[in-house]
Image 1 (cartoon, rainbow, N blue to C red):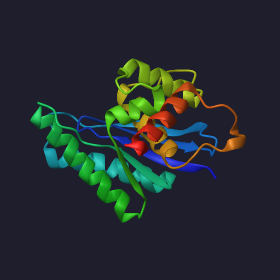
Image 2 (tube, rainbow, N blue to C red):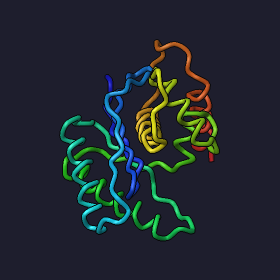
Image 3 (cartoon, rainbow, N blue to C red):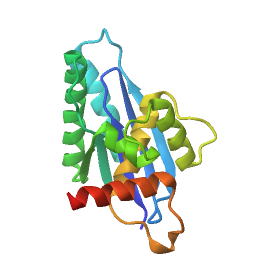
Length: 185
């Protein structure tokens, strides 16, 4: 059964939101992608409202079976982390209100899922997302590609590849090996 996943790359100035349909053989199809934007000089509460309403609109329009969010990670830029954490909280609340199952994924987890390498750069992630979705053009800006990568990662983590699906991509093989290794620990 195909699963629809809405992925969010949280940010206060640019928040990537991507929706993909992923089949049991792990082939992914783009449904929608956009970047919700707010001006840096706008009052915080208005920025949160704008992004929250955008995520709400997309949840209601696309009705995903799963919701995936990039896990907030520590960095030295505290104001940036705070904005990401605030958007993440709003996104989680909106998904929970709709009873959509939620998955949180670290940036390295997402990179490993789509590229086979947890330290891949943004260019590599963007190129692989375009390839996996069969896109003629690279998704831009990087926030859009990140949201799609998060959604793909989450769908791939939900279950095994169907045996009749044929060979896995190198990224899928690497991901399966990493999962198996983690279970042995």
